[in-house]
Structure formats: structure tokens, C-alpha cells
Length: 126
Image 1 (cartoon, helix red, strand yellow):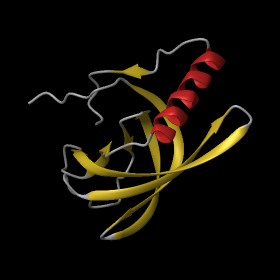
Image 2: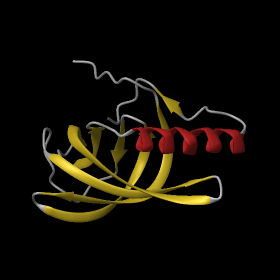
Image 3: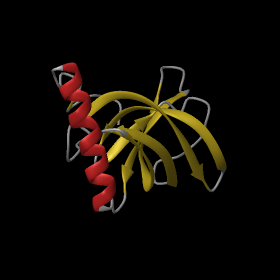
């Protein structure tokens, strides 16, 4: 079944702290949109449907903006050996501040690079 999402994600790389019922861990966000993101969570056993709380900071303008979002694991990506490569997280009820901060970060990043060719609509990451 094809995976659909509301918004195109952009390739990024920044650290995040993930908390779930099973505990907490640090990982790397590898793509993001205002409605979700993909985590390179290869050492963790989160399951689709599991609720998570994720904290990260984004540079917007001259400020570093700390964010904390609640989400649900939308999908788990595994390799051919059935090892987890990462997880797609859908942000549940993103606040206007979260949406504005992520949009501002992406717009600033695109302006600095002069392009937005990192947009991923039908990728396989989550």
C-alpha cells in the first residue's frame, strides 16, 4: 500500500531526543515537514502506533528555537534483514508555533542553499 503524506518533506540532519513508554534515546532527524519527520532510529524497537515525545532545536534567523512535539510512529522502515533503519513520525496536533518554526527553518535553509531540491514527496522513508 503506498504511503501518503500531507506535505513534502525536506532532507535535513539534526539531533533529537525521543521519549516513549519504553524509555528515551538520542537520534538524528533526516527529513522534516511541519506535519512529521523521519528518525534514523536503527537501535530502537519502536512500533507503528506507538506514541512518542520528541525534542529538538532549530536555528531560525538569529535564534535557536527549542521545540517539543508529540507524535505517533506512522511507520517503521526495516532493511532486508528485518533490522529497523528508522521510523516515520506524524506530529499529532502541531501547534501554530511548531508549524511556523519548522516552516521558517525550511524557508531559511532553502534560501541559503538557493534551492529546495531536498523535497521528498514519495520517498520511502516515512
